[in-house]
Image (cartoon, rainbow, N blue to C red):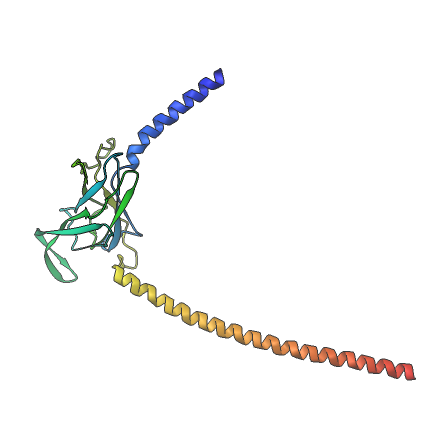
Length: 248
């Protein structure tokens, strides 16, 4: 009886913990694919879960931070979604690679052309962004999620230090420190170029290794043949010597 009460109490406690933890995992969030270093470029994924049992998410809007505008924002094509880029004039022009930029992307909107994000599923919305600010430790985005029943959820509440997590927290991208060699990161094209260079080097190394291995194999075969010849000669000599002794 006592054991059953303990088991029941444990089940209730586990259910309570699960009930408290599930909403935290259902928030719209943003994570980088690799490092998001200050002053560099990064590919970031906005993860949007469907929190409803009877409706699909059909539109997602991501508002970029106005206090740290990003000069380069490029979405990745997604099957089943159309994308719209909205630009705005900057109060203070940016200077990127010696070029002044007077406007920047302020919002990216994805609209479902199919079923959208159905109940029980989530969708990632990738963006290539840069140049990341050097004077900030994090970027705060504001996301708006729309369901096919016209319900709108605004993930726009900032997290205040020392306070509990808000009901609809805004996605926050943490920035890492720039590397010591001065390289802050690279664009997707630069990454592809950098990746190809080691590949060529590896190919050359593989070729050299293959040639060395081939030379080693040839030497081993020659030594093997020589060994066999010497062995046969030794056996023949032994047989002849034996016969001579018998004859004597």
